[in-house]
Length: 370
Image 1 (spheres, rainbow, N blue to C red):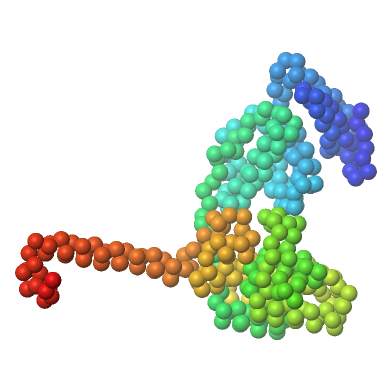
Image 2 (cartoon, rainbow, N blue to C red; image 1 turned 90 degrees about the horizontal axis):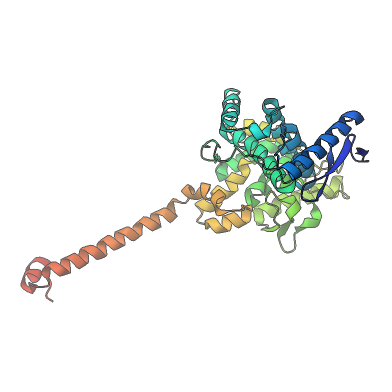
């Protein structure tokens, strides 16, 4: 029978899978009769699957709801996943996933493209659908087709927008002229000197800042890749942190947050102040995340190896870091200079071969006696 849980407004149902495993999940409804009907249908489908080998029809909602419940508990990016599912629901609501094929996926791509969605956005939305289908096949042992596979759109090369050191200084000066200028200026300085993501900095606590050893500690729960990393504090980053330390001592000594407001509460967003600073500095087409690109660009341009930049930024693979490889012309120049050396060695070898049997000619033409 359907039952209630303290953490959910909906009725929950339970039933047994053909493999003997019990499933307990939300019915997605507050109507007891509807929840009871859903539970009975699920039990009947499980019985047919076990006894007759029938693959019962699974609707979009049947696939998405248990997957979202799982994502809520285990995904740090749950809110993003839920947002993508909203777009999927507009198109696939009522769709029987067993019957979904490549044509249905292509229709979704066409619809979203006409609405102005980028290839990257569409791919992420379809990836959420694919993940939901895979999860149901693995955890609930449903044999659903996954028509998303092999049907993603080609995406353009990742955006890389960065500014020079002089522009960074101009942006910091412009930030100081606006509201919460000290906070935004320190944020900019710390970002371009550490390569940290926005949420990694806005969620930074003083207990994870070691000024003595000049290290910032990020645990897996604070990073996008879910892996802990330590970030060295250079002089530029130290200056920004000391500025925030002085602000804390004056306005909110008990606040645990590095980027705190005067009342001690964490700064949740700096977007408006940052955009206004960009306007005053005359810097266009530049967003907060581009500060991270700026840090990477400055490092690569200075000759820092890609692997070291990858470790600093916390990229899960070197592929993400390679988008900055074109900013290291000196490295490429050194590579092609090897060809000059090889060509010179080849020419010398050919010359010696030509004159080996005629040393007199070598003397007359080369001006040297062997």
